[in-house]
Length: 415
Length: 155
Image 1 (cartoon, rainbow over the protein chains, first blue to last red):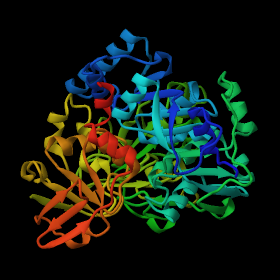
Image 2: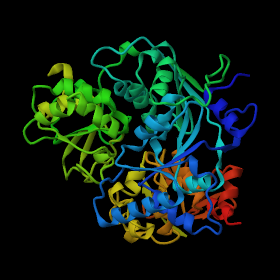
Image 3: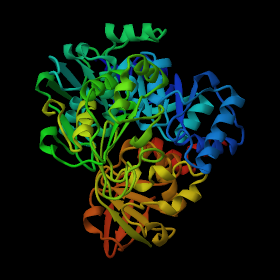
Image 4: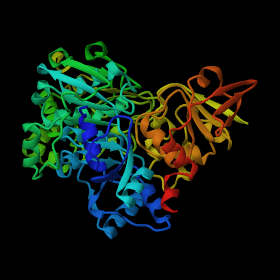
């Protein structure tokens, strides 16, 4: 019987010839990423172990991205704990470099790897054919100490992509459409795999955006076949694949969806659930107080180009704040070089340092009671961007920027 | 016996403990903000031995282990839901907090009801009625039995 991509990666990590959905395997982990959302607690637990020990320091990557620069003495203390531990143990450490998943994609992820991340959006790494999965700090610590973990081999839902996205429609619209269709737990415990000739039409930025959001359908991981586009990205970033896998012809999928990309339309996810999606046009006119262009989902150079093109020569609406947050230092520098940051600033946007910003609603750009944010961030949960009685709509870079200009939700083509 | 605190479907981990508290130095400093957005009296009213009962997909969203940790720190004996999101489920077992699937309980209890849980027998008692709950997979029961995943590292 054939194997899925997820089964092949887990089998290799477990050192077995084959495995199938439902099996439990003990796996060797290739890399372990952790950020400032939980690492201070991981360190406390580590220090309380009877025999503290790190299996392989070279596999650890620690990134301060959620609350940077620190917003309070408490945050500063948690950052210091993380920074000092990383330096003392020789752990690869970034601070101010960017949002963790973007940094991982730029510098670390290789096809075929099994990667644990103490962050739910670790499933983004499937854009380069790696099995990334989100874990809590106890699982992280166990992996850090032993180099291993156990995994229930997931079933796979396969999405065959056909055709091309129309002009003005983006990967964000595609993945929101899919989440709306299968619901917030439609892929719980499962892998979401994307293939088909339509995949080759999508840039790496698009692919990250799609894989990144799969956890919002509950997915354990997201995976994409590695093609020439992915190999070129790797080459440009100075890396080689660990291994290249794709699902066998006779692999068993729990469900198969065929999606015609040309049928996708601009989409908005309304408060307070990511699967609460409607065509963006149905939300046109909803008044906003703030707009956010950034995050591990849509803070890449491609997204900033889209936003800059929409806003060039125009201005942010009266009483609206527009936050533009490049996802990494590299993206920031590139945007600077291309003149995009000039365009945003001349239009009245605030350009911030690379970080998670208002996507996680704790340190920057938080919104107040009764306020509404339109965001390219990952989540629109109640209170996600600040006050518990506030509202977050999720949309593409184009829709978010057009909405910042109008002061109400607007599809870019209607500007 | 413990009291029921009942929640709807798709309760995400941001509701259990919001982002702005996650970088507090300790779980004890975070726990008073548990469920702040949904029930601001929760942290002051919940007593050791009480239960959280919920509809489908409890604990979806962020991987923050602080979510099960604050519930455990407040003394919540178990979370019983129709289904759980993957990472929350795994995190709960890892820290030694029982998470139990019951397709019936949410529909038959109200906020404030008293209930009893017999983990060994897999039985929930509410008034004079009993409900069977799904047993944990063997691997997870082992982790729970030894007091969480870290306990195994200290053996």
